[in-house]
Amino acid sequence: MSVKPKKNRPTMAEQADIHELYEESVQNVENEVEFMQTTFRQLRGRTAYLFREDFCGTASACCEWVRQGIDYQAIGVDIDPSVLEWGRKNRVGRLPSEDQARVSLIESNVLEVETPKVDALAAFNFSYWIFEERETMVHYMRLCRNALKDDGILFMDMFGGPESFEETKEKTKMDGFTYIWEQAEFHPVTNHMKCFIHFKFPDGSKIKRAFSYSWRLYTAPELRDMLLEAGFARATVYWEGEDEDGEGNGEFTPEDRGEADLAWIAYIVAEK
Image (cartoon, rainbow, N blue to C red):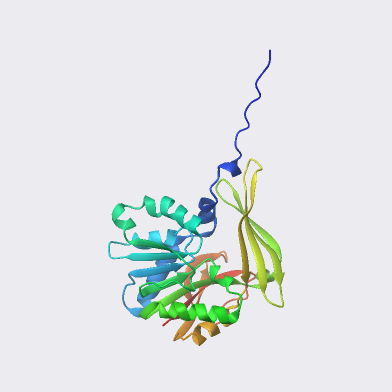
């Protein structure tokens, strides 16, 4: 009597969605939107309604922005049609119909796109570091300034600290998987770095190089200087505070000096 072999079940890696994993590991759009809106009100004395997100990916921040109410609109810009389509289906498409109408996604190079002038513009997750030539970076910042209303604000994030200059791997246990950030290459003469995101699952399966990045690691002084050169009136670093255990507490405030931490993440806020 012959026995049919059992069909192999798909691994956890084969069943996983890398965009869902990325958002769970890296993004916190609720905090990002709250930070931008709170900071905008503090600096401008009014509410920001029209928002643009460059390198928007799945457009989760755009979706979170319009959830604030019927007066809020968002524009997402990304050059990758596949990730935009995923966002339309899995993020924008899950919004109530009245909210969906207030999200506009544009497939374009951020160096070429033209949009209505916005109150707030964000370039998060360090994606703008793809512009490794200083001249190109200043040009991009100038384009951002031109895309803002007269009292508009540009929000960017950055990371640094001695560990950012190392070739290293960092593993973080999440709910149902492990997130792995790898700094695979770093060249001190140019500050060029190559980074990967991997995911590992309890059944031993892995998604290697789910996301790949080729960047220049810019320092805080460099970014501030370039923003001022691009015409912004002020460029302020917002540093994260600490809780009683010395860990980041998610509260970011203006800071002139910062702390000599091994690794840190901060915002830079540029006022037109």
